[in-house]
Length: 382
Image (cartoon, rainbow, N blue to C red; front, top):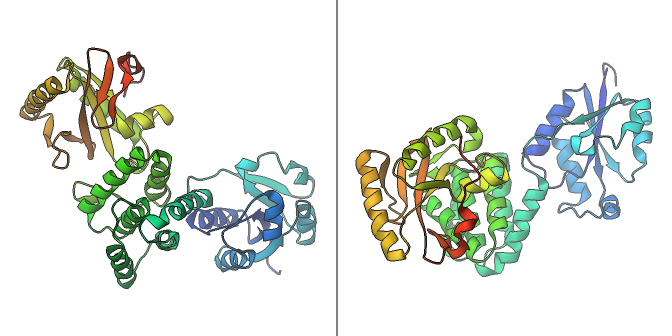
């Protein structure tokens, strides 16, 4: 290996090779001049309790085809690392930081580096989405392979016209809007190609409603994160595909949202974060990276659905007149579309409590929570 001054080695399964793997290998190559990748064999994965979707031969061939990789070796057992390093005259042993401290014993023969994990798409996320597709495939006559092929195209970042037409023809023939697999295939295909934004946005909402009804919320959230965080696709909103919060300064957007809350509070009502915005604040302390609209709710004074409807109509008319809101949602006829916040859409939902203290929040909480579950508010968007 004339001219090679610094050799790197790493280990992994590299199943369902994706852009996250490419970026990892690119970063590894910057540590030296020659990168060796040891790919776990199927037999070794079995010993680790792991099952790869792709067989070893395919995984090794795909890794070898990556332009950042100079050599591929099989990883057959735990103890081979020291042997490999000495035999290949390795200068740097590198792994992800989820392995911090596990290989420090190799520091006597080479430099040991743990690279921070980047927030890329993971093989685990892909397998979860494909597994969910397999579970629901019989609903629509589609197979999980259809979704896997569209995901593969999304990883490459391209889909030519003929391929789109083939997928679109298949989805048209197998149309089943009650199937979560069919909805995922449609949504992914059109977010990838940036086509039919209005219909795709409607199908995302439909998938959300079906997921809540069938108690598949975790599946829905994982799919949305894969689309808009890991694959980095644009989300449809107001008839076009636009950026998500992950591409902007969420601190600034939250500050602007706080100013909107102040204006809403001036109407003498309690205002709180709702839906995806509430989930992000509770789970991550900020807006969800894959989301692209802000959800508020306002607690009305009404104690019945009829009174709430009358109060809501009067309130929304006033907010539109005051210039705080743009219009009622053309989709639901209920939700109020506020003026955009930092270029992102903002929605306001009605909520009320009945005389027994049961909380209703349109459209997802039909009296199943108590007023005490909401008040006093504990999270503020400031």
